[in-house]
Image (cartoon, rainbow, N blue to C red; front, top):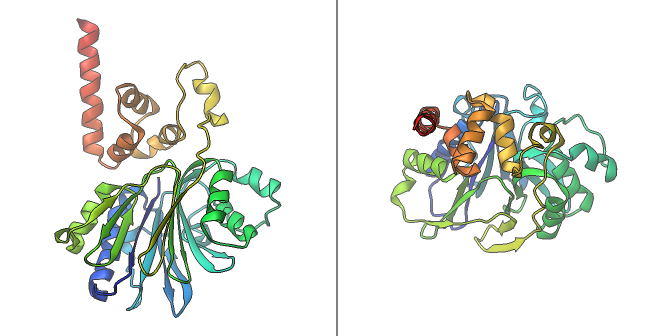
Length: 319
């Protein structure tokens, strides 16, 4: 469960000092979803620049140059591709009709199949996410149409972001979370994987005192925000949820179907000190996958919730 974060400043009235403070606050706040590696992308002198390291965000000083109009960031919890090799970490460089940076929160399960089917070139990058970059490069364009084709080709859980050399930001919302805020008076868009992360970052960077609007982004949405703040919205077809083969033998006796996001929770829960049975208990008790994902970032609340449910079920069994 990695995290995405960033901002786009289209009026130029927010000081560089405050924007740098916002960048670091966002990076530190999203660290709760991944500490294996961290990185940001921005445009400098018309060229996409990426700074990333195999370190947690709080150990890195993110310092985009004065005059930066947009920052796109990522913190990583490794699922595929050793983070010690920095080329496996996000953001990634992409080259099409424009140069761009690309980041992904989630897990893709058909990356190897796509490389074979689409005759994508072999690279040293081991990360499943990179196949999305290759699909865009193969189309030769970065735009809403190419992002739609890519999003409808991959299988798995995802939210993608891309930033091109013209300071155009793209957000592709799959089943993984995303929260986007618009500070209309400041001329500023700010985003992160969850609303809770944004609240923490805004408090730390003093942006909480400014009015903003929460722009709800549904699964299957593609957003394009250009350097002037104009937003274009489109959609892609959400693929039907399916069982990943690695889980099928474990759960094929159950009548209910698990969504991609729920299966990802089952896969990653051990990293947070809870078992698959704990996650299934929360799902059975009515918690959504998004709610459980939020709980995983608050260990005390998570364990207290599980304990309370277990006590309630124990009392029910007794009586």
